[in-house]
Amino acid sequence: MECKINDFELVKEILFKPVDKSKITQIEDEIKIIDELIKKHMEKAIDSSVSHEAYIVEYESLVKRCNDAKSRYYALIEESEIIKTKYIAITSFIDTLNKTKELPLQFVESLFNKVIHKMIVTHDGFVLFTLRNRKEIKLAI
Image 1 (spheres, rainbow, N blue to C red):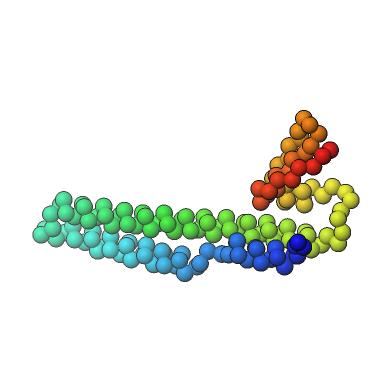
Image 2: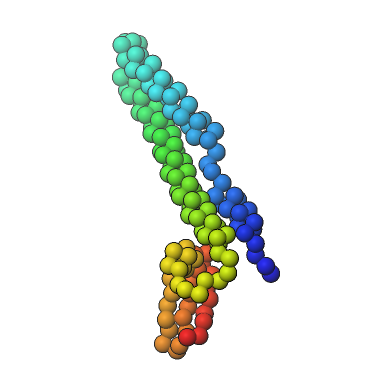
């Protein structure tokens, strides 16, 4: 089975699809709305018809909602940054493969580091390579 650069491009686009910006915008809007609710709720503190206990319970509920929304927001931002980093790395790898006209006869450290996760030399004369995709290749020395 022959693998082509276009296959890598397709995999890159599927695996490293950017986080949907509308999700981030939706959470930003939710945070703004909750902030406004908190401000309005704080104005209720002046109203003597609202019990202190009820005020505190509602206030804490709003703060929790806001904190939960912020946690989701920061998680999405972090996920987005991780995806961007991986996207850049795979793009660099594909570019390196595109520039390679033939198998290099010399050791190319950057290409090796992009493909190999780890290698183990065994006592029985083999080298076990673990690739970045977790596949293993065992070769005799």
